Image 1 (tube, helix red, strand yellow):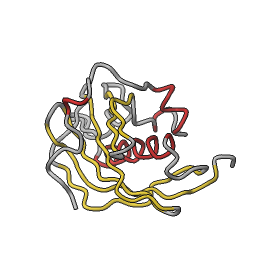
Image 2 (tube, rainbow, N blue to C red):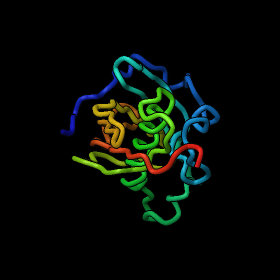
Image 3 (tube, rainbow, N blue to C red):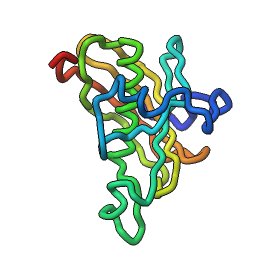
Length: 164
């Protein structure tokens, strides 16, 4: 079920002090180049199964040129992709689904409540709500500043062994 409240209180992290940057994210996620939709990690809580990450957008983001050139907006599917990548990072780092590469398995109850423009920092918060051998699910919210721009549930499924 979508939520309007935040998953993690923003007072628990400092947006200017990431706890992990792109090199650390790449240790756990296989995305590269244009498909990297995380710039840094701001917060992790294993016990609460929550994490916060962000994507710094810019005028050179790949979607700017073609997603409404006179009024560029981050596509909603890319917002969901950021949530999926944060979920994957957290699940891989803490071995909720050890030994596998996660792929997007589905989305539920997704709502878009605002926009992300070039130059915005898109902050994503996730909370794992289900973790079994064949499926992981996380509630997510996306923010620009303190404004909620999206929310929903992202699902991940194993698509390959890490050795493949």
